[in-house]
Image 1 (cartoon, one colour):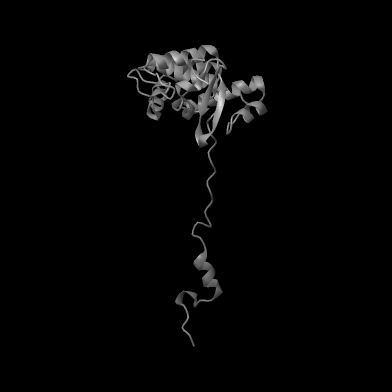
Image 2 (tube, helix red, strand yellow; image 1 turned 135 degrees about the vertical axis):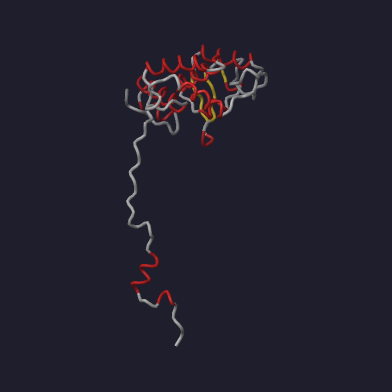
Length: 204
């Protein structure tokens, strides 16, 4: 008679207890509700005032905030924005965002002018030079975003309950656009956009 496995000698019931997950009896905690929501008009104005008061480079940071509020772009879209992506003739900017998604975003002519003036005034010359730059002429980074909004939060009494970030500004812009163009139109034109129902080149 061949020897039997010690772990299996107890019969079928012991085999079942051997494979049972120790987490089987645990109750999965409920996911907390997200605090993300679009900012209302008053909050947006107060954020702009907070950025103006706390930024060490208000010309840059106010333009960054304006860009997100008017375009609905993700942070990656701003960080990857090149001078050649700004098309004055079509009044658009070409955005490259997460998951390698690319899209053409209409912008107000005044915003396009401000972006070109900012970029060229801080040393941008080539088509693939980044638009958003520090006073020293270096492209801004993700860390710059963190610093920008961390400082602004200190001047906003409601920041503890409402996220203040580039994503919040994107959500604000998309919701405002949806009220005008309709939610299905905005959702289809921005891959991955979550819409809330609540309250060719720079020289062309």
